[in-house]
Image (tube, rainbow, N blue to C red; front, side, top):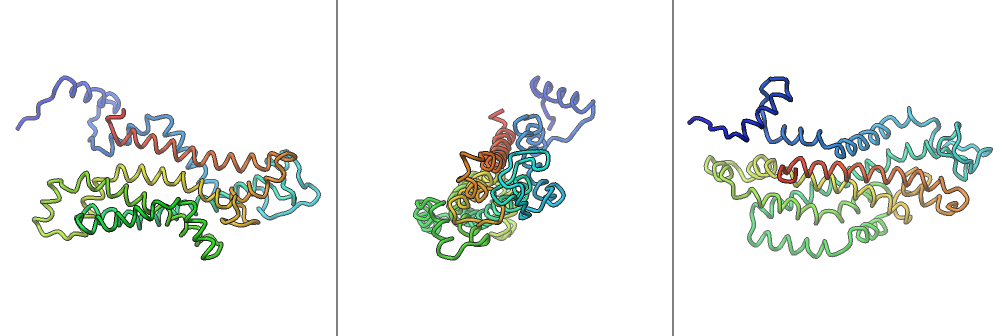
Length: 304
């Protein structure tokens, strides 16, 4: 059957040919989404911020001029200068180096927290949407009760009960994020669970596991990606909040929230000690939010 091109489709094809210098380029939903994403300046800005922060974390020993715990008693509470770009704290430690090394603490905790929440909550959400019925009702009612407890308060309780270290912090934060992840995955799978390709897979004898994770989940990846990127920004803020409250990463480990906590007593006399860790937190959350907004627009052409 011949493919009929409307005038509007011909205009779209002409624009594509012009962009690609007359070469025909295969168009897929993912390539179209990528093109929309890279045309979004705020998304590119968010991506640049995130990449810069991750490069800072990876190459912290090369970027930081001092070790994060190196003390200079002759230069305690000195303001920003050429020797110490962000100044020094009350023990003479270089704040720029501590903020740079802080990226190695805050970002990995947030990433592992999101990974654990996605693995647990995502599995529950997919199972609930696929099997439905009594299983879905029971699991979702449990998650409703679970989700009624504020995630931050639940994290504080878990850290207080199991001890204060980074592994427990990841567990506590991920437990608080599981209900929202499960609802996100469940809602995304519901939109595709009745598709024809699911029935076709069943007809050729595909296993439930294969249908769920090889057919359903890849076709519902849009909302999932948005939820994961948005959760990364939230978890960065939660990690810093718990450390600021004294139940997260403890000094002298240079986590951004703990840097704020130990610097708050010098807010009137050395405000720069709070300013620079706060800027790192704001930049990381801003980067994930901008990228999340750009992905939302790119993955849903109706929002273009």
